[in-house]
Length: 523
Figure 1: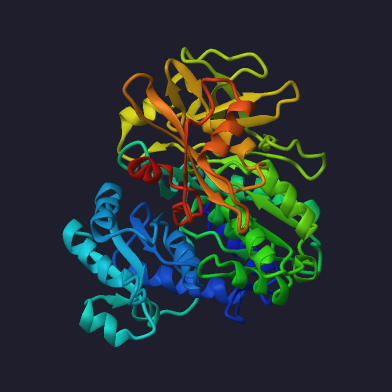
Figure 2: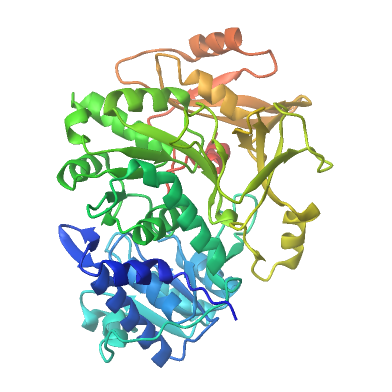
């Protein structure tokens, strides 16, 4: 029987370079041997609780060393990791526990502002999840206030010798929940083969920019580890490749720049709003970022389309190349990328990665011609086995043998993919399809526009009308009528926004994406 466990991305490097640093947090370090040993102790502790191969264990933890320790401990025990967004409320946590049939929840104790542990206790009581394990610095608080076992308590009786459970390549390793923007969140079942192959493919893409060999590259993780990009393209890819991974509990521009300089960061992944925030910060504080980021060899952007103007300004200011790619939770997540070996095509998300095939299809699932818009469909070793306990949704997503992403894109003659928009974000104005991404890209070039999101708002006559929500650049003034008139000159009559609303900021989620559903509900 063929066996494969996602934990091998850690175990392999722990065998090769056990004393190399694996994780850095607040200037403390874990070597590969230490990380692997701690994960083995978690695995032994879970096994003692009765958690075994195929069981589902939820994990709610911010970017702390405990996340990879627990993540790989769950995998070593043969169980399935169900990462949860740390910002979920008790009702939402309970939904995920019930929907995933979780037998245990490992949760960070949290802070007074974000009491994750207390919310986890309430969610376990509500959902009937049998085991709650709290990650805490104060075991007494966990046992008396919550009450719950602590991670330290389940690890304490065990040494670091634990034989990792064999799993088949098509066994589920991770269940990642989709954002649920079009309904209830669904759990994408990702296999050990899905996750391992995507981590290795990511490493092969980024490796030409890295030092490698006896020297060690350093990656910075500011994206939340519960998110698929941070798991695959940073944690799993980085541990497989022997990198030192610097964890940041949350993204904050000043801290990010300080870490880039102090930790000699060579590799970083961010979403477009993070790049925009760094540009705003260095401009407002008159900082030259080049000396700070002098070790930065490669930056990666994903999660949302990168505005051309933000990419150009960042590459000019930081003197570092950005590779833009595309992925989604159901694809482990990477689908396509601009590659180091050839020039990027700005505005595109590059070529399919190794083993992946992409097509764009019409509403009858027929391929469209190069340059024509269609729904992006994907096949490859990275694509999930299905949505957990949702056979109808799975069958609909995989109709015709392809995974249907719900994204609208085009393929050019060279096979480069451009994401035009989310199908759910598309605006239907008077029978015409309006794609917000096109309008946002051009509006970002206006001298007064620092950030923009375009949405559809209800309209009695047309069904939907186009509206832009704009954050102005500091010190640059413009009015609604001036911006509307400028847009009128740039776009066809059915496209340009009829109204502009100025805001101090736009709502972003835990991963840094602009939350358009909040804008639509408040516009």
